[in-house]
Image 1 (cartoon, rainbow, N blue to C red):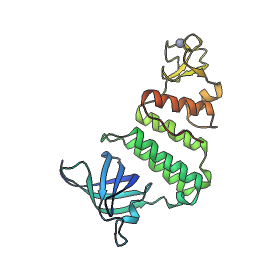
Image 2 (cartoon, helix red, strand yellow):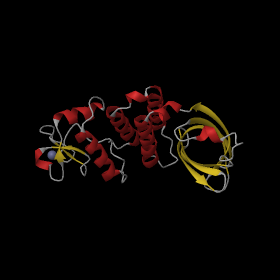
Image 3 (cartoon, rainbow, N blue to C red):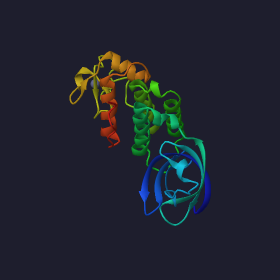
Image 4 (cartoon, protein in one colour):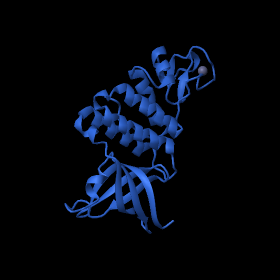
Length: 227
Ligand SMILES: [Zn+2]
C-alpha cells in the first residue's frame, strides 16, 4: 500500500535522526502504530517542527514508500495539549499514557477505542493539570487494558470458576482467585476488588499491583508503576 494517505494521530515519541530529522512513533485510529520520518524538522525554518512534539494530536499527510518509515509531508494541529507541560505531575502522567500505548499497541491493527482513550486522557490532563491524580491514571490503565483485551477476570475464580471467597489476586491465573487456588497469589482486599470492577474510585496500591502484574504476566510488558 504505497502512496500518500491522510490520517489523524497522536505523537507518542520523537527521536533525533540524522542531521535535522526526527523519527516519530505515531498512534493512529485507522492505522494503529505508524513509524514516520519528519525531514528537516530540527531546522529553525521548518514548518512542521513545532507541531510534532510528543503528546500532540495532529492531522497528517504521509507518504508510504518501500521503506519501513512513512514520510510526513503536511501537519495540522488538532490539539497540542500545551497545558500538560505547565505542570510536573500532569506531564508525568501524559508521558506515562503515551508510554503505555507505545508498549501495549505496537501493531498496525486499528484500535479506535485505545486512540479515543489516549486523546481523552491527554485532553483532561491539558484542561485540568492540577487534577492529575493517581485515581485517574489508574482508571486510564484499566480502560486501556480492556481496550487491549487484557481484562483480568474479576467475577469468579480465574482458576476454578468458584464465585465465593475471592480474597486474592493471581497474576498467573489472570484475575481474582478463591482460597483453594491462592498459590502464587497475593491478598486482594474487598475495596481493591470493588475498585477494579468499577475502574473508578480511590486508588489502591493493591489494585495497581494487580494491574501491573497482570500486564507483566500476559503482555510481557512492564509499565512504570504509578508513583
Ligand atoms: Zn478457585
